[in-house]
Image 1 (tube, rainbow, N blue to C red):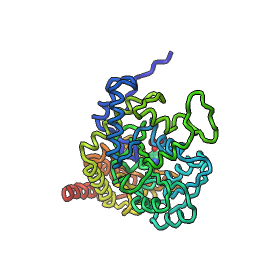
Image 2: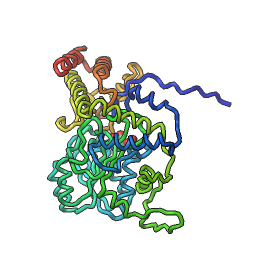
Image 3: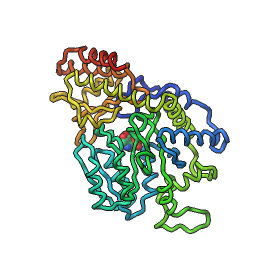
Image 4: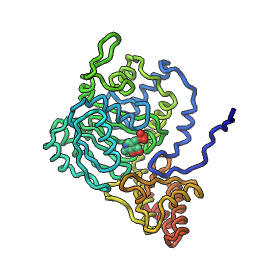
Length: 404
Ligand SMILES: Cc1ncc(COP(=O)(O)O)c(C=O)c1O
């Protein structure tokens, strides 16, 4: 029989678009003892998770809970539960994750309409209003921050537009939540899903979601499965695992059995939210802005160009255009092999054209920014992109002295 070694991952500084290194306090929380899912201590942790994520999402929605699975599990659970075959949906696409919403709505057999802007831009609200008037969708499905382009779509006016035309408004806040403002109730967002592995600062594996009563009413019109009752294959939600009606019965005081809760992942999600609230949501967003701006300053001082409309970029991620005659993958490999630092590339039309550097969660810190800039500049010089070495680092250091 083969002998397998215990897993011992290398030391890495994860400065890509997620996942990121997690705060040791979260790792520590995850090493706690497992308990049964109906143990009163466990159901109390579940209730606390609901309360904590209401604060994170800025909402009073009772139905705020975790879907087990990565961020797309949250998206799928909401879509598959609220969208019936043939429902009209409108999706403004400004990057790869708008395309993901398109794909998932198609799988729900929705009647899907899309509008697009070039990658690196966001939508003006009147473009969305025009399309809503023309198409008359039941749902508007948006991404808040599209990680592939680094852009952050302003949502406040879109929420008002959706309210005016009685359109249910969903947003995917996987990349933005915890590092950028997200005001679910004030901005009239009916349903939101997120993910742990970016600004929320945790391990991937659970997706916090929040859904308002209006949207829950739509979901409750789908058939509720009861033992002994016939199943109507047109009315049933096409997934057991992602049936939000069943998941709510499980998270509510009814505690009806559904899946086996992912205990360790729930501990992590609890600790992430607790740490954010301890830091203060506003302070945390300012921290993401500070280190995002510092990175931007350093990159510009290195003579590199930024991708996209900087006015609308997320605080936590930067798209850097790979200079001509530099092999982007070779740079990423040297960053990882020789400096232990991971940065990202992008998808589709941006693959090989930009690097994406994240400063999120636990890694939204001065030392992480300065180490990343130092490594990147050394590698670029080694490969023939000449800078006055040390100048960008010094400028960033000075930036911190002025801005902190
Ligand atoms: C905006 C956005 N939505 C959805 C996803 C999908 O997330 P996951 O890989 O956790 O399923 C990602 C992943 O990066 C993302 O950035």
